[in-house]
Each structure stands twice: as C-alpha cells, then as structure tokens.
Image (cartoon, rainbow, N blue to C red):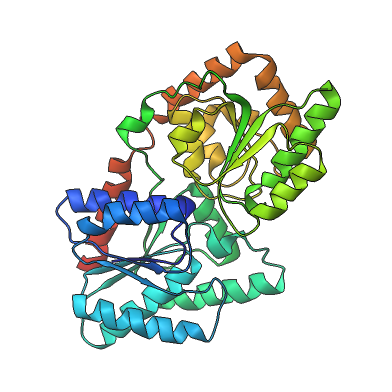
Length: 371
C-alpha cells in the first residue's frame, strides 16, 4: 500500500510508476492519498490507474499542515487498510510518512506482519534546521524513525540531507533514483510555432516560476524584444504569477496553460527551464533530457547527480541574472544547445530507469520483511 498526501507533481509520478512496475511483477498494490489536491490532469491519471489496483484507491482529506482533522482522517485510513492486511506500507513525503507509519504500527500491535517503509521526497528536508519549523519537523522525523523499518531515498542529496538535518538513519536504507520509461527516450521535436522558453511545474515559489518571469523581463530589457514563453502548471499561487507577468509587461509574449503531459508541453518551446530553489530528484529534468530538449536548470538537490560530468553548466539557485544569462546562451546558439541536449540524453539512459528503481525498492521490501 502506497500512502502519500499530495497527488501532484513528481511524488505522484513516482508512486504511479512504482505501482505499475509492481503490478507488472505480480504484486497486489493500493494507493491512499489526499482527496482535496489535484486538478483535471490528476483525475485523468487516477481514472487510468484505479482499475489496475487490487487493493484499491482510497482518497481522504489530508491537510498540508498538522490539523485536528488529521486524527479523523488517520482513523478512516486505518480502518480501510486494516481490512486489506498489506505486507508493506510504503509511505511518501512528510504527511504520508506520518500517516502510513502510524497505521503500520497500529497493525503491528494488532498482530499483523507489515513492513513500514519511508521515502521523504524532499518534504520536511527543505526546511532550515535553524528555523522554528525546521526544529519541530526534524524532531518529529527523529521520533518517527523509531516506527520505521527502512528508508528509500531518491537521490544521494536526499540521503545526505536527512543525515545532516535529522541524523544518520539507524535503520536500513537504499538510494533508488527516480526512473523513466523506455518510450520517454524517444526525442520530442518542437512545433513550428514553438516559443523560446518553457516552464513546466508546480506554481509555487519553491519551483521558481517567479525567477523565470523575472529572467524573461531581464532578457527583454537587455535585447529590446521580449522572448516568447509558455508556462504550464497549476497551483494556488498561479494568479500571482499571471499578475506578475502582466505587471512586467510580458502578457503579450508569455502564455499560461493548465497542467498537461510533459512531452506535449516540450513540443511548445525550444528550451526548457527548471529554475527551482529546492528539489530532490525532479522528474521534469529527467523527462526533458530523455526527450532531447535543451535545458537550463539550477544546481539544487539531485540535479547535479543527473547532469554528472556536465554539472558545471547548472545555475546557482535564486540567481536570476545568472538564470537569464544561461537562457540567452542557449537561445543564441541553437546548435550548441542541441549538441548538449543529445550528450545529456545519452548519459542518463543507462542510469535512470523505472525497472532499476522498482528492483531496488523490491529488494528493500524483501529484506525488511525477512527481518
């Protein structure tokens, strides 16, 4: 049973890919997640996967922050999972990690043999350990480790961040990088009317859409002509970014779209920009590289692990002038941009696959159940 809060973005992609690989290997799989998050795109994805889940799809309200309603939701989820008696509860993200590991512990007390697995996916690890919130969340993470049987980290960065901020895990752990499917390595060619740049992702400051818009304005001021851009994604902060583009005079050259499949979005622009302030192991970077798209990205989280020998091309996070400079460099030299894209694509193909990710996780399940 996979338990997580927010069915959007990379965490949802990770769970779907892992669940489908596990089903293909003959396992019975289910999903528990929040019922109040996600849009039309996520509903379509749920409709696709729900019939394939022998243990079902259970969606209950889960607030992002700690809330009195958590107890009610926790008990609802516990009752439904208890009836299924799973061998493994694989939890994802901070809130899903608390729900799933507590439910697994309740099941253990009642005599069930269940392994409690936790993958942070960044989550609380993005907090500053010197802040009040950071101290609270990292204390909670240390407490929850007592009812955890094993950890999965999606990048070396995530494992190191956990060790530095929470403490080195005392329970077994593995690094299982996000993987992508073979068909995603088929190159995507841009449309004839493609824009110059694409941002695709969640509409929140952590992902940097504000920096992307500022970089577009900087390039316009430097060149006298605004570059064209597509911005794809959803989130409660989206109206603020639309207003920002209008305020900076970019409305005529910047178009906003609801969430759409990544490969469809890649065709709308020549260059993909990932201006994140924080990440763990972002799928959008892997997807863009696999599709052969020129890419500007920041040096955060596991992105340097993806770029490997080409990591010196990454931009310092939060540095809008440097982001604009990197965007301009690829725009002005399309031949170099495509050569770099093809070299990156060749470098990740043997290293990031769904099959390797699922096999790594399956090995951890088996070892945890054996103990």
